[in-house]
Image (cartoon, rainbow over all chains, first blue to last red; front, side, top):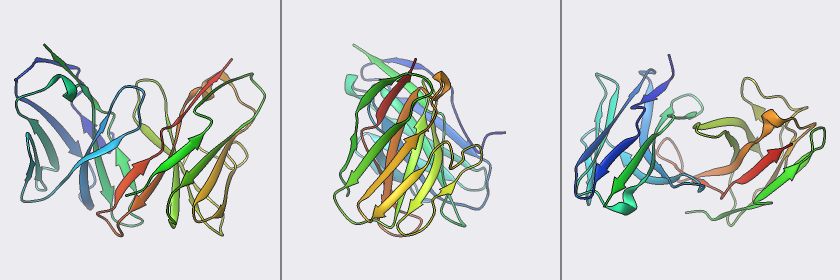
Length: 110
Length: 116
């Protein structure tokens, strides 16, 4: 089993749609959680950190469920510019090793 | 934040040759990381480079194949040695900024390597 698993995608959604990505992690000692965004042929960039209480940044909402070892990202009112690969990232204790999920590809269509 | 540059941005190489990738950061950082991202895949950590000590390699990666230098706190190089077509990939340099478990990780633009 992979340490971080994500919805395989791709997700094809129309503009304005709401889309949700899921991610599960296997190490219960994981300490920090993030969503990164990677555009085609570009490097990954931090989208948002994920906090236990859940957090929101504009159209983006991230949730963490430690009991179920589950992370989610919700995108509301999708824009064409949201088309990208979304990487679930988990950082473990003990050396702060960072594990990247395989990513979920999102295509937003006009 | 951190601004990272990498050189070269891309290269096409013959098998059996070696390529050295340079990574420059605009601020001093303790650890620098080298990742590989193969087509359609996520990032795989190759090694962690600390200034003044040997790099720490992840399982499946060895120093003879991927020698790393870290001469100071803003610069590192990764060499891909005796290349084969299986080494065709994007190689990314990365640093963590912030301190502790909540560090933000920044990436360089990557070096796209094709081995013929």
